[in-house]
Amino acid sequence: MKSLILFLLFSFSSILIAQDISYLEYLRTDLREQKRDIIAETMELIIEQADIFWPIYTEYESELDELSGERLKLIRDYAENYYNLTDEVAARLANKKYELDSKRTNLLWKYYNKFKSELNPIDAAMFYQVESQLLMLIDVQVSGEVPIIKKPKK
Image (cartoon, rainbow, N blue to C red; front, side, top):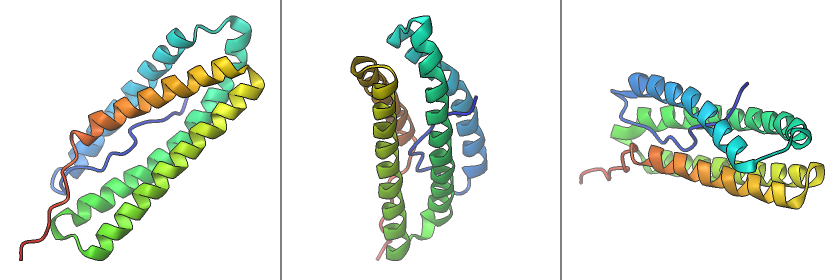
């Protein structure tokens, strides 16, 4: 039951990175179950719909997990460069974040369309809305823990 999670985890300082990533992995596991419960409760799918929905959602979670792995690499990269960030590294990190954000948006849209064709437009829109809201909540929680880039002292 692979799944999603902690998306833009633009991390903590390099000193705390190992501890923080362990904590984020714990949160990731916990959020998987909570997220599925929220979706199940909100969607109110009948058995026939659930039989269609959950296998597709599992595919979605699997693809989302791949992006999560890329984001974790980005976090490590940010943490490793936090104290001595160069213009080039900052540009590379920003470009990668933009790329990952775009991939996530495209993934969500891909599965909205899949649900729309396999179920119906209303259930697909519910998936899109609820999933978007959950991802935003996760992003807000994570970004509260992320230090802002510091300008070098001149």
